[in-house]
Structure formats: C-alpha cells, structure tokens
Amino acid sequence: MTGRGDPCGCPPSITSTARQKRSAQLKQKAQIKETTDFAPLGARGPGSVETSEPAPWPQKAGKLQDPFPVDGKGPTAHHKWLNTWPASCDRTRVQSSGGRSFQLDAMSAQSGRVDRHTVAGIFHQTFGTQPEIVARGPGRVNLIGEHTDYNDGFVLPMAIDRAIWVALRPRRDRWVMVHFNDTKQYGEFHLDALRNTGEGSIEYVKGVAWSLQEEGFFLRGWEGVVVGDVPVGAGLSSSAALEVVTARVFAAVSQFPWDPVKMALLSQRAENRWVGVQCGIMDQLISACGQADHALLIDCRSLELQQVPLPPSVRVVILDTGTRRGLVDSAYNERRAACEHTAEQFRVRALRDISLEEFERRAAEMDETTRKRVRHVISENDRTLRAAEALRQGDVATFGRLMVESHVSLRDDFEVSSPALDAMVEIALSHPGCLGARMTGAGFGGCAVALVEAEIAETFAQNVAEEYRQKTKHEPAVYISRASDGADLVP
Image (cartoon, rainbow, N blue to C red; front, side, top):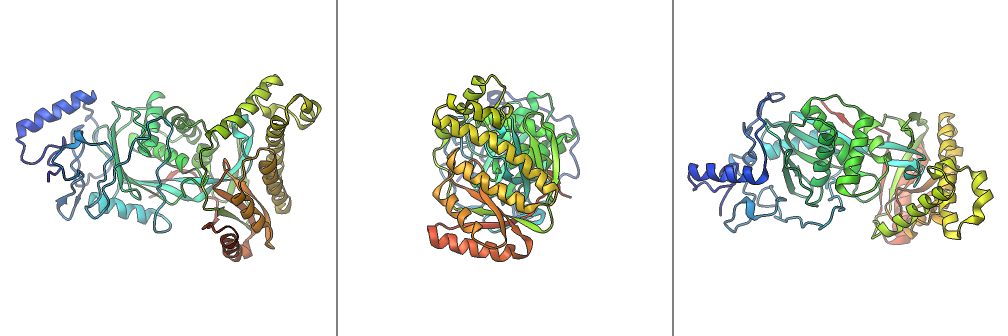
C-alpha cells in the first residue's frame, strides 16, 4: 500500500527528483500560481507548509493517515473527494451528480448538539493541534411569509440555535481543504483554479469563493473541519448556513471587513449561479443578520431589515415530520412561472405590487390554478406584515391565528403541503397552549413550526412527537428553539 509520502502524492520510495517533476506537472495541469508572500494569522500548528502544494496529510499518533484505496495508485488516479479519516471508517467516495444542481450532503452531527468545544475537538483529532479560528452560521426557521421572497415580498424568519460550524487554521497559500466530519468526506481546491465538478458539499464552499473573487476580494487559503447540527433536507436552510459561514471564514482569514448584507447577497449568488439553485435572499440574509431573541422582518425588494422582538412568554418549536421533499423541481417551477406570468399580465414588477382589492377585481382573468397561486402570495404578504406588528405589540394570539391562516393557504391555494405536514400541524393545534402552527419551508415534506406558551413547551414537544409517531408511523424530531445571532466568530 502506498501512502501520501509528500504533498504531490508520490509514494515515499520515489526519489526527490521524481517528486519535484511530479509537483511541477501537477501545478502546470491545474494552472495554479504560487502565493506565499503574506504572513500567517496566529501561531502555526503542525503540518503547516510554505508552498502552494497541498499540505501533508493530517497526522494522528505520529502516523500519516493513508487516504487512498489499497491499489497502489496516486492521487491523480482517484476522485478529488476522498475519505481522509482513519482506516476504521468506511472509504466511500462521493459520486458526481452529473449536473450543476445537487443535494447538500448530510452534515448534521450524529451525536446531538454541536458547540465550539465539539468542533475544536474534531479539528484537534484531525490535525493534531487546536484551531486558530472557529466560526458558526445558523440555520433558520421561517415563522411566516412562504413563497413570497421571489415575489419581492415580505418574510419573517429567525436564526435558530442550530448551526454549521467550521474550525480551521489559515494556510500560507491559496489551497482550501475541507473535511466534512459526519460524512467522512474531504474536498480541496485551489483558489486560482476553481472548477465546478458537481461533487456535493464542497461546491457550496467553492461557490462562495468564486462569488467573493468575482466581487474583487483577494482570498487566502485555509484548512479545516465542518460539523453541524442543522437537519439536512428539513427546510431549515443548512445550505445557506454553510454558504454564510464559509463567507465568514474567508473574511476572517483574508482580513476584509464583515458586511452581513453584502456577504448574504454574495452567498445567494453562489447558490444561484454556482450550485444552480434559484433560491431567494431570505435564507442567506437571516443566517448572516439574525439577532438573539428576535425574528427578522425582511423586505425582499429593498432588503430593509427590521428586528422584531420575540416575547419571552412563548417558545418556537420546530416539528420535523421525518419526511423529505422528493422530485419537486417541476412543481416549484410551475408555481414560480405562474407568479411571474401574472405580474407581467398586471404590468407590475412582482406580485408584491398587487393589492388584495385589485386581485379580487381582476380574479376572473385568471384560470383557477393561477388564481389560487396568486391569492396565496398576495394574502401571505399581508399576513406577514400583520404578524410582525402583532409580535411588536406582544399579541401572540393574533400571531398564532395568522400562522394557521398561512398553513391553510399553503395547503389549499399554493398546494405545497403534504399529508405528513398536515397531520403534524393538526396534532400541534389540538394541544392547549399551542397558539399557532404551520408548515415552513418550500413544502412537500420537512418541518412545521409552532408557537407555544413557554411553560408547556417541553410537555408539548413530547406529546406531539408521540401522537404523530402513532398516527403516521413516521419518526419525528422536535426542537425547542431560541432565536440566535447571525454568523459570527466564536472565541
């Protein structure tokens, strides 16, 4: 079996001349250039290197970990995604999705919640030293305002106390090397040779690097581990959390100021144009701009942000149905096209510019399906503004009623709910102390969200989970959440 004897992947038995030749070939092939003219941030740990070649593989107990299958081949003979954990882990390589749009690989921690101690410990286990920087980017739950963001409307999400975490150390070069802990996968790229290969979670990191460089930022390399406790596929924006925390990391390593709104926009561009998912701006904005104990009212046209305090008498409970969205791209595209076509028909920029009164007056001009889709968006914008005002006044009863109205509209007019989501909302609303509940996220699976009185939150969570399990035979997950700050560095 061959090991990673030097940075270019040559076995230890190869002569130094052969290593130099191999290194030159790799650099020429990638068309990369040396960038070693700046000082590192902080004390350098073991394994630091001075050139633009990848660093030697992380050491553990004095022994290099062999990342390659037992076939005698070097790194260029294998996929760039490689398992770099000890031999006891499965050596599973990620297969390319074959396209520009792909699923974010599962990254939620397998053993409960993640904090700074957790991710720093994983970094130490991987690299043999403590991280120089630790950053987090929170997931989000949208309290109200669904399918309004791409119609220039209003949304009211909150950043949750579950996040994607990155522990890292800066490099002296422009290589970025990322270990995704829970999938036991590894990805690397050079900032002067970005290429979209559609290979899973690393593309989100690569896409943010591309977006920042397109904007004119000079980036420096880093190596680190990614760990998270945001459930993937549940509609809690694990992808946006990864994008925003990646931007936060690049800002820290490359020493440029952190501008939350600008970084959210550049992260959205990464998802739109690099990953290939045409999301709105809500997910990245709340992950970057969240504030503890507040929801965030976002005007998706002007990007005006208003922090809305959450009353201490209530708790937000996320209700994961244990079901995930299937192939819904066509359903999403159909709904978005109907919204855009109607805006053109009304000669306005977006549905946000049509009042309820004007809609009712001209409803007969639309077919029944389009009429339902448009009615949801227009009424949801109105509900969201009223819900934000209710929270400001501490009127949680009105807020809860508007949540229920939102769910009915999403179920009957926009038609993006599911039997599992409907069952979860119905069970939640049957419990005393539940002020309101609705599906959240794009729909067709994932999570519902409930607003409950603080003193019964624990009992509510346990009872709803058990009743849902018995009624649907699905295995739910229930999270009592607090609103958290947006992406930040954790000392």
